[in-house]
Image 1 (cartoon, rainbow, N blue to C red):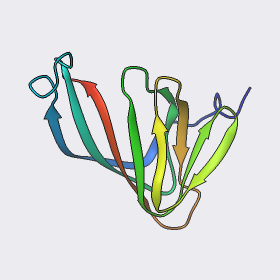
Image 2 (tube, helix red, strand yellow):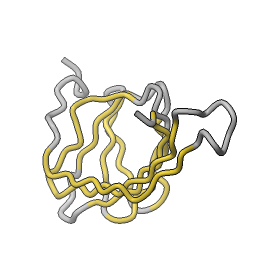
Image 3 (cartoon, rainbow, N blue to C red):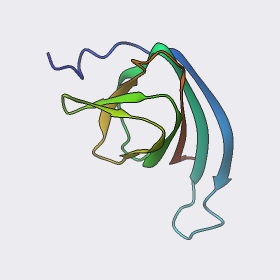
Image 4 (cartoon, rainbow, N blue to C red):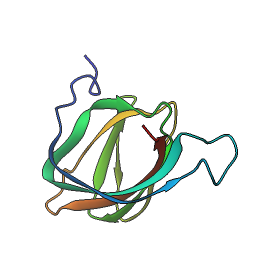
Length: 114
């Protein structure tokens, strides 16, 4: 079993919706889609799992505070404050906070309006 398949369930995570924009009126062809911005806080020892993908939900993450470990393709990569990682149709991953302080990220993605 790979590290990704053994990802634990979500725990110690708080997600706050900051805002959304309906993209249909803004860009032809994007009816039924919205741009979403969330703040995600992962407490020390917290996990944002289980393994999930981003098919149909591309986005990008910016780490405000702490360190978040991104697990994908059997590789664990730490991201500290600053630009984090892209999340595209090929992304299959899970996240954790191995640090001693709460990690905070801003996640911006395109999602279905339903």
